[in-house]
Image (cartoon, rainbow, N blue to C red; front, top):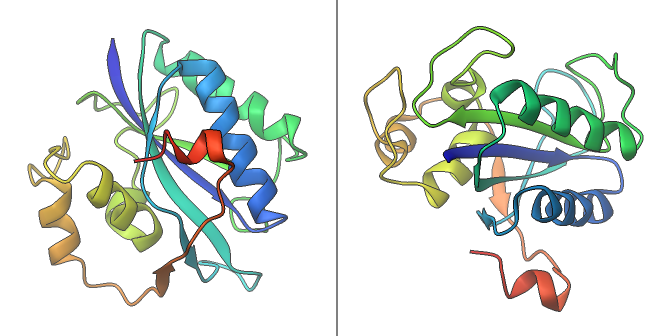
Length: 169
């Protein structure tokens, strides 16, 4: 089984799509852990604020199968297969890490956004503070402490359904 971390984001009907992503990931992987939910300004384009969090799961799916499953979930909730990187998103699911694997295909791992975006690194450092980044050799808590970018984000009180709240970390 591989330990994976998944970035989850939405800036269109955010509550609905974050809940849907959580339930879809439970259906796919069984038990998952989650960071708290953060609200952040759009990065790379002008748009509505996002809700972001990071989830962790154990899987025996391959990297390619994880990526394909995430794309299928995104499309199920209305994200076009060819949507641009910097735009509003109903649902955005990105594989951040797959154990300590470093690769370029079928997707770049570890995902570059870990080192660049507060909305990925902060929830990852909260969920997996002692996990080591495969390239930097630092744990995620150290990486967050060293983070220098000026990106605004803040924790929110997310209204999980009762069954979901009981499983959230």
